[in-house]
Length: 352
Image 1 (cartoon, rainbow, N blue to C red):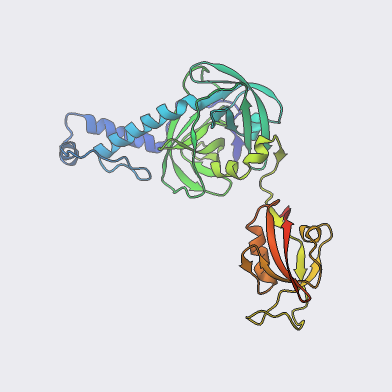
Image 2 (image 1 turned 45 degrees about the vertical axis):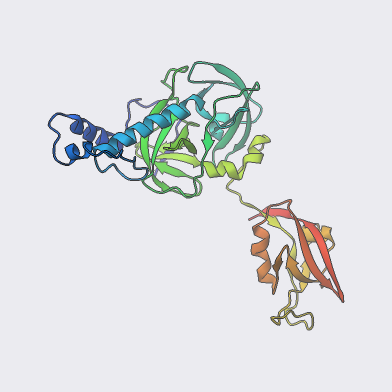
């Protein structure tokens, strides 16, 4: 599938997703005076319909509830969606002015930019960090605020079919007015990408993808050449690297960094020091400059515990280490000769 960044030439601004057109047609039909049968019966029900969040509406009442929920969501989030000078969009996610966008809008840390809110207010800001691998970027507004902001959601457990709305400022759209709104559904998700059918176009880069609870679940990045599939940076990738973005780092988030201790297994046939299972994890190698060496761990030591987890053999250790974060302090229990020692180690890091 050919892909391109969406800050190129603007496409026509009147695109509506296939699903939106379908249900708009149903709404018009159901609203006519000739509507009878099932839909007429639905209007007589006293209990209000609940808007479907990840399925098509089954009747006129559900369609109306979905429409009302979409309107409420847009009203809630649009004050926090901003246009970024130079082309692109962003979403304010904290009262003190942190803005999420994409790396190809932020470009590099330390640039002075301005953003324009839906009410026309223009505010200066500075670009912060960029994850070029994921195309994630961050901006910090000048001034104390408080600024209108949205709630961050989660993206790793999104379901196909989830209704969502996209808000952004296409190149041809006038700044100082509310952002353009597109309606669609999640098609599928990957670790690095959310795919939807809610059409986006030039200038939408950095705009927000929201669920119908008003939570930010993605940031617009690009679309395929047919505009049938639109791509977003999942919000969880911002969660993963928030501190690095806020510090102004320029990096590739596709390179996984994991915690590292720096020990290797010793002779499995060495006698003595077996635990109750008849096994022993005797350290054979300690890597120079590693967290283990800095903590004072030595070859020949028998490792008994890593944090609260008992160790039977070397293969027990790597999964426990990788669940931790680089820089985390861990207590390690070892046996050296007749002596049992508890040692504090600060974990290092390596590319996973």
